[in-house]
Length: 192
Figure 1 (cartoon, rainbow, N blue to C red):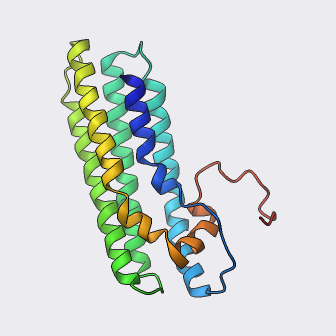
Figure 2 (tube, rainbow, N blue to C red):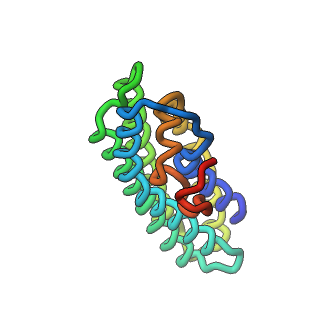
Figure 3 (cartoon, one colour):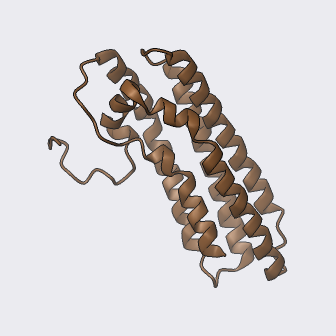
């Protein structure tokens, strides 16, 4: 059960951290500038999400006390909620990307990031409401949280996938700030 919870949790932030990808030659400086603006703001938030996921996975061992799991999970969900909110703000402040349908893409991405922020805040409340005095009840409650977490990570991907597609996605994939923390092991000068 705890492994299912950890797996569901780690899946939730995978999409946002999957911004790195194949890049192609792109001469559109405006798109690259937009991507850099967003990605420079996103990087610290990706690190917060990664750190929160790590803290939950470390605390989700079979021998962890319910009260400790509850405290760790609540703090992590708040941290993730804040990170999604900050990413939504970054995309909003950057303005529409200079591509076809950029304004719609931006608005949908902001809406999605903000919705993810609210969903994680709700998960925090759900975890805080679990009964830590009864191990079985707590485990059942945690299973419910894991199921909800799985839904959040599946339902919230479409607008972000659209933001990461086409010219914008290519430009974002080139920005170190949009790459998964620790994913850049090659030297900055290396050309793929």
